[in-house]
Image 1 (tube, helix red, strand yellow):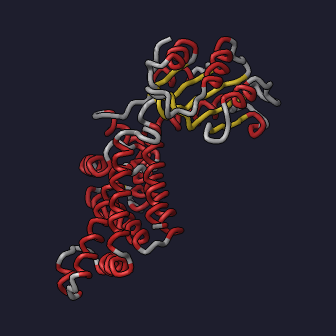
Image 2 (cartoon, helix red, strand yellow):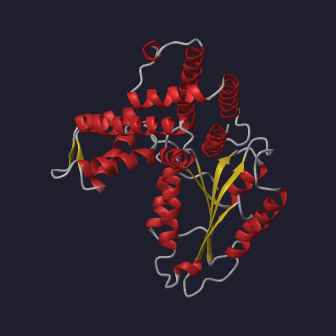
Length: 347
């Protein structure tokens, strides 16, 4: 069996046909996750006791063996069960993945004779097609690839999403939104929801509305993150970081933001050591008053060696993300940023 596209999956589900095993791969995780939910919803639409027939496993906490065991159980008062497995990697080297050899053996055995009363959905964060287990999955399962949307499909998707929210967007507004966000559908979806509400009562989204709302909300969140991080406000920092990452911000973009802030901290520290007065120091920075005050307070309480240590830790994270050390893909990059922020809060 060849790797399928979204349209082939859509046609299958439209006919209420279900494969015993799905493998959903690709960079566009928003559409992938939506597809997994759609498969589960349709497969269980007649289930009287859905909570007894839907099971989710994360390989961070569970195993393929437990997932397969669940898939082999008979459904309760339903036509089928749905078992979903997430948070695992099938990588090029195999060194960083959490799919063990025994897991692969269990999975291969199940693929030879899958239950016709279950739907097993696998959501790998990485899927190296050259690996032996990947080739077996392509041969035995229904593998669907979700690539990032490109023009004109991306524009069409944004327009349809506005329509789902009961709004209409001017062509210039759609173009600007895509320029600001890019092809990240998860963040686009969040911003479209906000814009649709903000466009009340006429529900017409204009270029000016996108310019004011999207840009300002992103900048405010960024400033809020760095300010709370500098203040060592752990609870608020982690809360804001999670929201920004959930909205689809690229980890490397966030790392650049954090790195720039700590380089400014290093400069501010040197100026404080040199005995510069507040006016002279302020002239070196172009920051809002609250951000400047937070920066100077951090510079005064943090010694020079500690600032150097912080900058080195940021550089290490940059290298780790770019080389996929400690985990690749969006999940691995997110983990690296989260680990960095926890350490910056504690140093």
